[in-house]
Image (cartoon, rainbow, N blue to C red; front, top):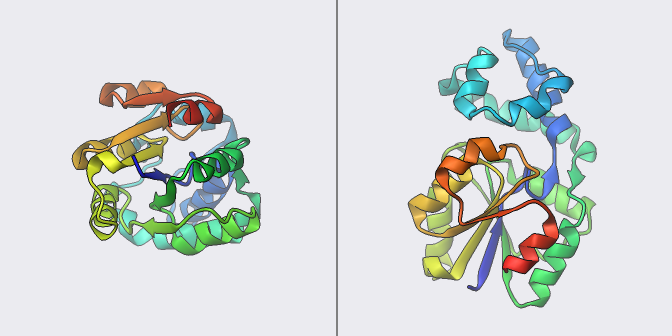
Length: 205
């Protein structure tokens, strides 16, 4: 193993409140159902399809909504919180000689600004998918451009779609238990590793 790829939202960053705020602006604009803060924990137990149904949002509209969503997200970037312990995890992984990358469906500008705000300088590359379900294609591109085998890479993410993408490509994944999808949502996909604290990532690596 040579490279370790991180997801961003829910894995490195706690952006739950900012996500809710950005969504609610869009919901008011287009008359979708808004998110109530008290239901955030229960939403983690729902799939993306179940969430879209709950909020009366047709998933086919995602490509047109996402650019607006991430612009609103950027306006509240100062409220996105680095997961406690993750800066040390990145430091330790770099010191062990691994190359660190981020692959996310958030915007590259948002992620780079967040890394700069938090003094994180050990991420070699940030790649983003314009489609929420397109991570497998971005991972394949990363493997090809970096001349890597699937066994050279480990992905760390928090969502069901992360696991699906990794299985499509054939790379191993660590699922983290503090993100957007609960264990009930992801366990059917059987991630290679499950962790519930950042230090456990270092044990696996």
